[in-house]
Image 1 (cartoon, rainbow, N blue to C red):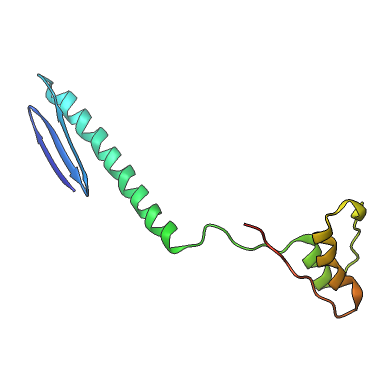
Image 2 (image 1 turned 135 degrees about the vertical axis):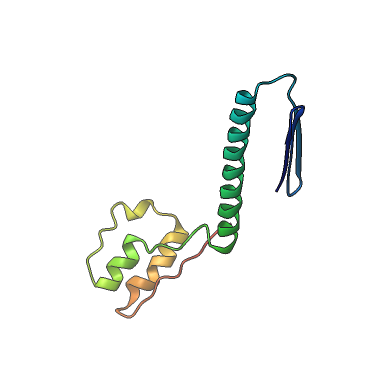
Length: 111
């Protein structure tokens, strides 16, 4: 980051962002206040840049096993209330689980 402060204004350059702000007749107190504000903005931009880099290297979503899968793994009972209202695709997926003791569930995802 490049930052130049003089009595007529402030020039700030950060990556591809170039800003120039002219200050007509401001006091030293006002200049120091503006300088501290811009330092705060600069810290916020740097923090955002770090977060962006971290987000690029990590997944935004992760798979979490649902109640059915957890129950099957533990051998617990599962109550399928109003299963008759389920779509045929859902019933077809559950059919493999219910047919035998070593059945499996096939997860079909859309979009």
